[in-house]
Length: 253
Image 1 (tube, rainbow, N blue to C red):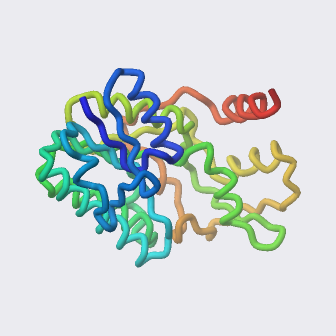
Image 2: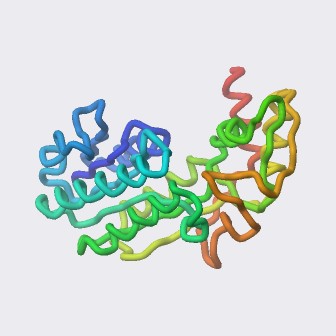
């Protein structure tokens, strides 16, 4: 079976490609670097020829409101059009837990627009919404930094190891289309500020951490419902502290 992974060279995509190859499928890691561009359409029809499944884990190069909306709308429309022409049987996409609860965020509005295009396409689909990855701690801290202070929301969220997101995604890819949206989240709910506190302490970062209820995440203020999953998510097993210690041990070996 031929599977095309759009964004197949990124954090999630490259891991997913490796997992799927272990199941003896033909897997194409598609990206602009490999000559497949979902914005211009370059190489798209050729890449999707005889493909049964397409997985879209691509991301916008710009998070500015207009640019990110344009990226997800144009990329998704081009991709779905090419899939219809190629007779693709299953479209799988990644999205974000709580996206519909944060309309102030241009990025998350763009993800909702992407989801709607997929649902309306007529192509059998599955959408996996994930919480934030453990790997995002440094970026979240940097985004909240002003001078020597790091302003982070105390709102609860439920971060997860990216490996466990890929495991959930692989199960969806190799299963029948759900024609629905499902969620995956980490095993522990915690305030975002405490997640970043652990990161700063573990990396011996001297910046001062400020718990700030008005701190923005992707342009939106958070509350305790914003980024947490609903009633029946798939839960990972790896705790952040254990994951971080394993990363340090790997780096030092």
